[in-house]
Structure formats: C-alpha cells, structure tokens
View 1 (spheres, rainbow, N blue to C red):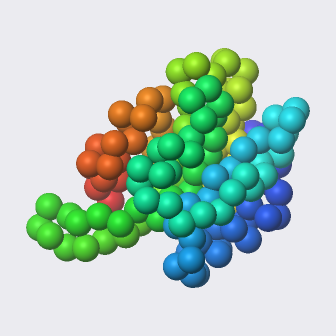
View 2 (view 1 turned 45 degrees about the horizontal axis):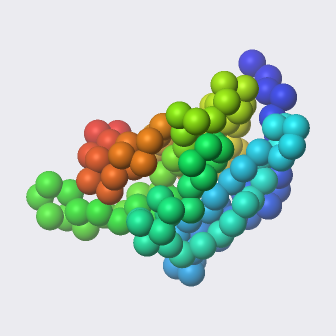
View 3 (view 1 turned 30 degrees about the vertical axis):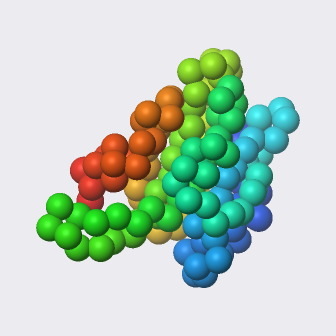
Length: 137
C-alpha cells in the first residue's frame, strides 16, 4: 500500500547522526504543510523532562529518542525508539497523517524497530515508557 507521505533526506541523516554520535539523543520530526513530507524540526540533547516539555500540547510530532534505562536485573541498556506523539487536542486529520507518517518513517529508517504511541504526557512518563519498550524487547 503506497503512501502520500514522503520522508525528506535530512530525516535519515539526522537518524544516523543520533545513532552514530552522542551529541544528540533526540530528533523531533514534523509534517510539512500540507502534511505530505516528514521534515526535521530539531536535533537536540535533551533530558527526559526537556523532551516532554518540547512536545506541543496540540500538535502531533514524531520523535526518535535514544532512551537509556536499566532492566529489571540491573543491566544498563539504551534503545532508539520512535515515539508517535498524538496529543488529545490535535485534530483527527493531523492524527491520521502522523500515524501514516510514522509507518513511512519506520520504513525509511533502517534498523529502527521499537515504537510507541502517546496521547498524553503520562503515556511518556519515564518508567512507563521504559516498561513499554521492555515489553517489545
């Protein structure tokens, strides 16, 4: 099934920058107007709290996040995760476009397989996020 949404080349470069270097741990993507191209909104090195603050309360976003955590047995891990941010206040057309865009972005970013959807900041609480990712491992 084809998609009407494309991924700008800068998105792939930002992903590999995040994976290859430690200068950034988050890449926030948005859809261009008219919701047809995924583009990089920002590359940054954010604490978990800063990441949550960076998410708009009424606009969806896609976030690639390098999540460090410890497993139940104390083993330190870090995983790269795609977060599809779909806040409750966003319109249905925007939400649908971002769900499609998350699939297109996953296909474009080779080696990315962990993903979560969130509609509230509580969904992205650090411990809740770690539990959701651990369930996918």
